[in-house]
Image (cartoon, rainbow, N blue to C red; front, side):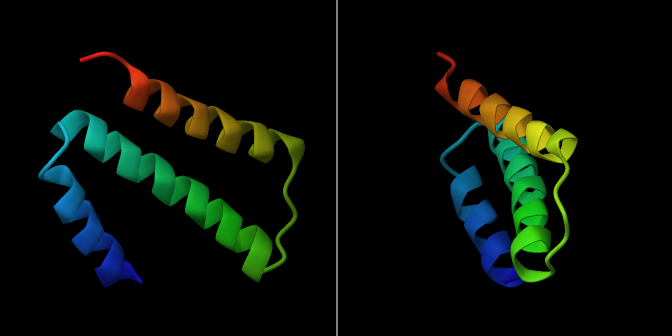
Length: 68
């Protein structure tokens, strides 16, 4: 999974500005780590954690939709 993610990141960064692409990847990594913990390891998710993930995802969408 790590190698596939690194390959996709390398491919995506060819077509995106470095700043936007890197923030996008970091945000998605954090979101996927939280979701994996909840789904696979049955970790509890407090409302603060859910709010944080929501803010990260919202920030990613706002960054991606900003005019260049």
